Length: 307
Ligand code: AMP
Figure 1 (spheres, rainbow, N blue to C red):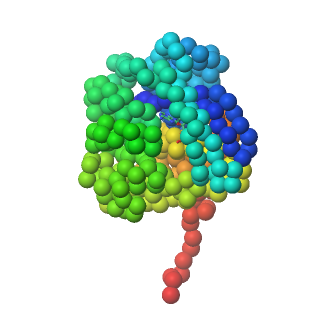
Figure 2: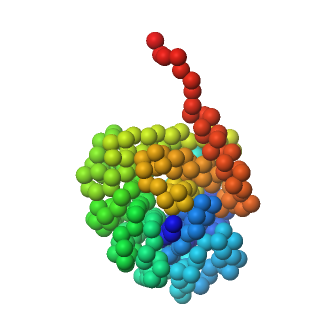
């Protein structure tokens, strides 16, 4: 099944306990598409500046990602700069965000993209997410959306308008609390259900994920990782694994969404083991399967009762 993503393609400057990288290939659409490419064919709608390197385009093409709707405009590519706390990787501060070519971006979907079966509105300006959704000539089987505090704090009205129209919302625990005003995650998820989405996936970093889906609740831990190099893109890689798996299997049942949560967790756990998209280089399907099995191992137990 066809999978379409609109989001940012960026140059990230990142500093973590493991080191620093300047102007490394990043962006929500980049992480999402690289991650989902291990499951299905993915098409990217985004904009890059004329400073974007041919070698970075080639990296995306190496994953067989369709970049024919990646438009190039004069100006600089989107830039993001962040620093992670050296003693707690869950703490990140954004030092700088430069929208650059995204300021005037007008996403135009090709006729075939308008027919996509699955659509992911990755972290990007909410009005661009809306412009993408309204161009679809048929309603995708699933429309999912991710966002971040930058848009929640300053573009809440636009963000609410697009959230009303999607099926699945991804947010981390801090974002959903700030968006809904609820600190209890169950209460926060209920607030989102009242707005529209029937599935809410709350990411809790190294503490895993909780999914609320039409009355069902599913939790998954994060795989304990000994050597976290760079958490940037973990959320987008998670979403890529989740949506890529659903598009590949073309099954939106609750059981399959639960498996998709694990597929997402596998890809998120890989992303943080390298800077930028480095860990995905030479990643094999066997490694992905091994990690999937490790999730089964770390979450299953036998019981003869508890009393
Ligand atoms: P994550 O670590 O999953 O939150 O995603 C980080 C990625 O999001 C980085 O590669 C950034 O380039 C990208 N990013 C950061 N801020 C924004 C923003 N305001 N809009 C779109 N993408 C962003």
